[in-house]
Length: 134
Ligand code: THU
Image (tube, rainbow, N blue to C red):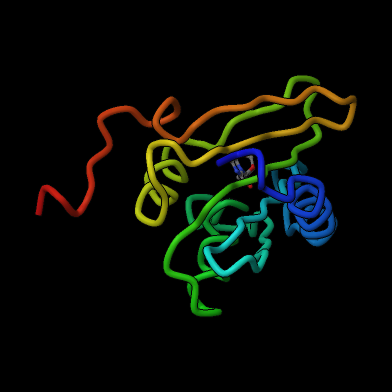
């Protein structure tokens, strides 16, 4: 249920991670935080590379940190970027989130000016390819 998600804690963690983003090329720092099933929050930032295509987004880094800390499921995702309108995760990150979340998992994004976007993962990635097909 989205109601019992500690959104402010998630967005605080996402903003703290965003401060540590490594984005010298795009100058577009992003922060993300995920809530694991045990209640712990794991955050990540985008990490770019001089070989641009090797860049890893904030959302995938947050997921990787969660998994490295023992999480197996993600209950919620929060994303922050310095945009006018709150922006959703990119397609690649949607697929990676889908590995650890459900179609009804809430994903929220905030922009500094106060705009907030609310989605479910199923809205962002309908007809996801999952392990059920393997
Ligand atoms: N980026 C993310 O971290 N998450 C997204 O969902 C979209 C894009 C990063 C990648 C790159 O470092 C910068 O934002 C510009 O695309």
